[in-house]
Image 1 (tube, one colour):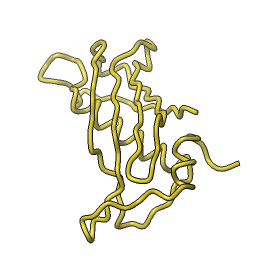
Image 2: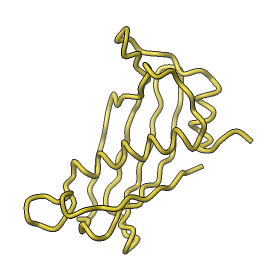
Image 3: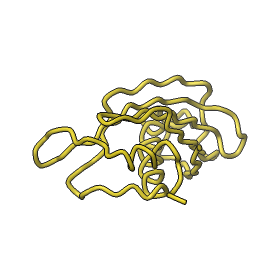
Length: 134
């Protein structure tokens, strides 16, 4: 199941004086969308454990004007003990048109030890479900 969230975009999000949202901002929006997704699904982890990207792929479809806002749809396409893969479809909120597609492969990292943390089966199920438990 996909999760959708929206963000306002600001004039300070633009690249130079183009009026279009910078690609780095789009990437940051996917990271913020993941945080909202995780909270929505009820995923709990210790404070010293964070989700980090092991791999990111991006395809840009069209520029996003700063006044348009961005809607991000998040879907988990694969989840295992060592990592999970998610697709982020970014659209213009104002126009509904595709802006970019990001694919992130995430892993959990223990920030104290610097080592990976296995994803428990119940967390894998929540990520794949994209919603809180019934």
